[in-house]
Image 1 (cartoon, rainbow, N blue to C red):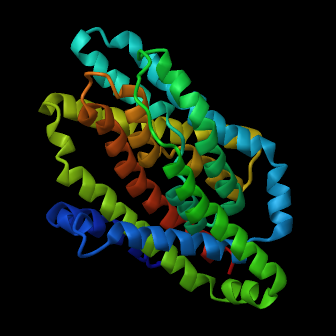
Image 2: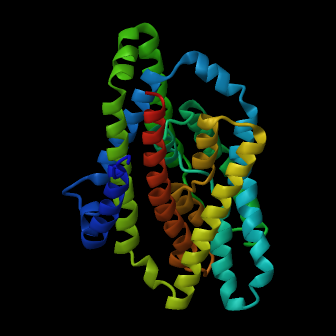
Image 3: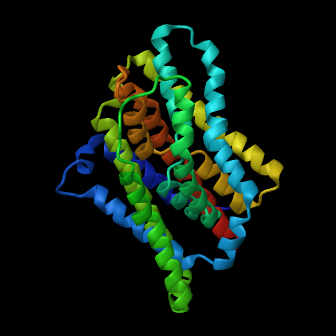
Length: 329
């Protein structure tokens, strides 16, 4: 009988979540600059991606419009439509804000760093994930306020968008470009990263564990679970889980109907099911800046969704990556 080996990465994700519950302060203290460590880690990850990327693959993925359409459709159309379907069942006026918080979650762009890293861990289509995660942030500037403008009166709040796009440029775009140029002129770097790909994959996993820890720590330290009563919290949690699996399942069906291979399916399902906490915090200021709706309530489903999808997709990515590695040997 074949012995089933435990998925170490999945276990470590559980451990990271558990540590964040008992020691959330480690993510908040300036003694350990965790946020800066994660930022530097993400920058290095994308630099290494640039070293590994095959330029012919990049050109091919630029023309892979069906995959791009599926990911952007999932992010900005499928998510909001699923939440809209639940609107007729929200009869109580005091529950409207909870539904509104889910609509806010559904209208947000995809996160960049974690979706790309998880696609890489699962050995999916990394160039397509990078392209679509970046594209999602740009599209979100227009579509997120448009969606929310249908349900929330226009806010007079203002925000400096340069913060997000400076982060996008310095952590994602420039490292990928630098790595790609370096491997183009010095092919030895490209061969080195390919040869020791397993070590670099471990580094990817380590950064994801830090992101998981930080995400859960923020949730616990801000007591997001105490912003609503117990029954509402249970309902919100169940709704978050149902929404994730509905989108994950439907994205899989669309990928199958489109005839996507393994790598494109992973990119579609992982990049299409992510929602960005960074964009969520910014868009709250823009859309709800003058609103009386409390920030904790609006961001609660997003924080729960962010933590849940990181955990679940992290486990799935680790398992699929291992299976993919075994199948290629």
